[in-house]
Image (cartoon, rainbow, N blue to C red):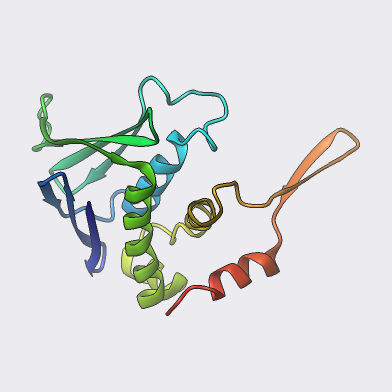
Length: 186
């Protein structure tokens, strides 16, 4: 399993994935939140985060735009902690796409590879620098932290829930978050 994602310049990235000797490359652009979108799609399908079971049947979808090409992601969490990754390529406004990758791998292995690349981007560009490079979207920091915490601890990121006068508030501990970020090796 290999997942590579590199910023190529302002608003463009290069991406390559390899699973079970099947590989595919694509260059998403700034018209979509490529990095944030894929992290959200990965998070949404895991039973720890998908408490309602909404994504069990159809999985999670996200689209990367490359002006005019489009790559549609469908991620589905399946039995035995595996993930089915289906990538469909569309040229221009074609209605019928071509499936360019349809492979299974272990969810945690895939997540580890993706987070490795995301962490390298964070360390190289920083939070503000990433925004300057990607232009349209912020670095997906909260989703990155949630998934990294899950990968290391097999549980959800600590969130405190308080109810005062029937109003629910949820908050995290900023010091904990900063300490967690500072544990990364840069």
